[in-house]
Length: 409
Image 1: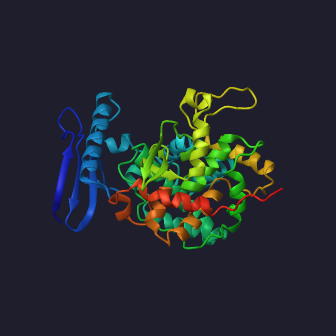
Image 2: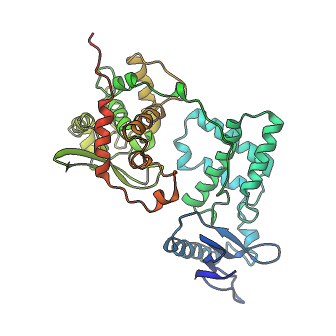
Image 3: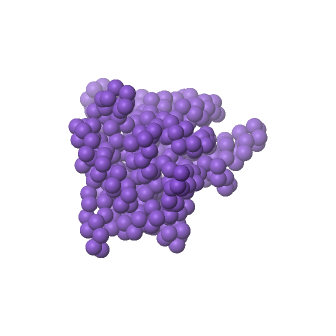
């Protein structure tokens, strides 16, 4: 095995101080992947533990990661927090990782029911792997996680969906620790496979008639909910991406002789972690123009300001929260005589958006991805394809055109 490319950061060990050396490199026998080693994290034989970085990681990103990891190690050494056997002293246990995950900003957006499910998953993995399982050194491999989940399935009579839930939880926690907090040098669960099954979500989708009611202003429905639902239907974005939209992230441009309004979804708030501009229909653009004339919007700079408008008359200087949108949606269902279905929420709008958009685009998955921000179909599309916001304009108008006109009273 030879190194096709290599980059090192940090310092070698000396008589006075342990090593902070980090190395990232490619291997001829594994094309397209980048590996990383940290000199102070070793196997029992003394060799540095080799981590593989996520598929699609660029050399520039890997070099930056190596430098940041080495600097973090240097600071720990200077502060006296790392000794000669750093792998022992800096060991990250599974309990520490999962505790941090459940205390994170990510967890703040979990609904109460989802938080309970997450707690159940946490207890399961701490039970089968152990609270003192050293994540940095022992790495729960995809195969190990799959075997443990399969054994629990056979022992407890789980359905494939339940087995998948536990596996996806562990994968999400590992991904968060690696990508968001840099608690680990690589995601050890890349390549994790979950059971194949087709989930029946028929009951979790709003009908076109129900969405038509949700996206039109109603005297008994908060204007922020109406606007949020209109944006959700036009763009297929999640409530966590819609809630923090800024009022200055709106732009109207000429597309083929027609004025089209675009919304900026900031990468920091979108699950895809990429900033993108997406077109909305003219009907939604009209709702946006009305919102931009409100003092609460111009004062705080949020398209959907927080607070309790209609009660105290004042709005907080913060955006509405995702859970706040869900509460308004629940109230709107009552006002509009829409049946409440547990766990449907804003995802019920997105599911219909995706269903309709696939028909409108004749199954063009790339156009669907451009609108919804999802990045999973292929690495090529996620990493290399450049998105053009103008391509989302016809789809937005076509989506709106599929909603039925309100019935005459």
